[in-house]
Image 1 (cartoon, rainbow, N blue to C red):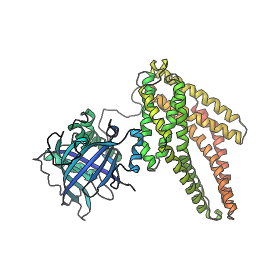
Image 2 (image 1 turned 120 degrees about the vertical axis):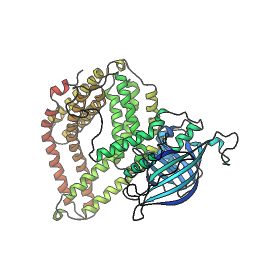
Image 3 (image 1 turned 180 degrees about the vertical axis):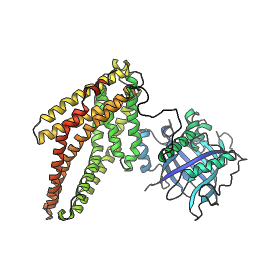
Image 4 (image 1 turned 90 degrees about the vertical axis):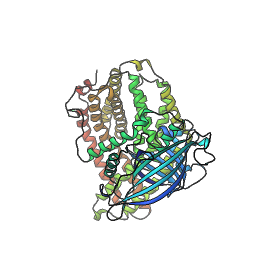
Length: 555
């Protein structure tokens, strides 16, 4: 079983002359307690072409210290990483290897570099003796894994050896961990000449200094940028103003169309690249059942498929259509879990709104049993999809498409021109479907027509979002207006699905001798809610479909 901890730390350069300042008295620190010396031996794994390192991910097997075992570190925000731990074994544990499958694809995970560290630890505690942070002074030796099979003393002839000294400050408090403490510690360290590390991690430095990976400019600035981003986030959270150019961010400033110029091919490929990035980054979150991760991954999948269908002047439909079919499959697999989440939340909220005098029978228990059964089924289905060969093949196909994109002549045209055409083409499709829905007779025919209109609205919205870099504010506003139509139609469709679930629950309750009165009551409320959405549609559509909104999209 893997355990997860949130790692919030900063690294600093040090040498043999570096002395730590007295950290007692900074922020809430009352005492500094010596914790002794640890000898650590870590073997880092990656693909031969270092795909994990490129993504800021590390996988290691470490012995020694208080947390010996396998450690997988995933980026989790500025200056933060999620560290997922598993017990020691000879090979990477399957539960950790699965979390990087979307990165490594069909490549093997192999030992890349070995690090031996002699760590001197000091613990920062508050006045009550509770731990706040750890300060570690590390003496580090590193070798390529191929040269480190016999872990003799450092400096053996023939080895490509790297050696350095560094300082780590890591928050350890079990409750609220305030990054402000790291800021205070950094100021104290800077006062004695200690500066942030150039490399973002020990692994990055080891790869560079042993010649396994050339130094990259982004590695040199990653640690500083991470701290700057974290500080900006804290300023935003606490309402502090950002420094920057005068007038930045003010409504009404600048020109009506702020989108950048470029080719349509550049626009669409960047959008495709971004959606693939989101899918790959969310893969481990979905596997770990992180809240909202399934929804976000499904949205990225739909956006990608929508881009292939909307921007046919840019990408060859003959190539992208089969890929779109596979994206539709993946969205459907993810949709089982996401639809269950949405439906369960809707039904739980609906039951809570029913007065207790009208909740006849074990309604809450019946709903809970129904939800848990469907959750287990949908969860198994999502994991089976992510573990399957079909998903892996889809990811490889998407990477290959970006490496050798099937561009059409329109890809060389100006981005605003092609983007506007694509959005307006999808809008006309939406308009036809809305008219069909409004003309359809009430009942199942209208429900189906409204659902088709909803899908068309989503496609227009995604096309407009993709066009935003080229069309600027008009595309942003247009997407926002169409989103209101989509949300109204979405609520209607959720009501259709909820009524189906309520029929199922009522039947089960009836068969168990519990009675289905409350579920019937909720069914009636859902019918009324759907009727309200149908009455609202003409007004919402009229507002979203005004001619001047479409005219603003044209270059």
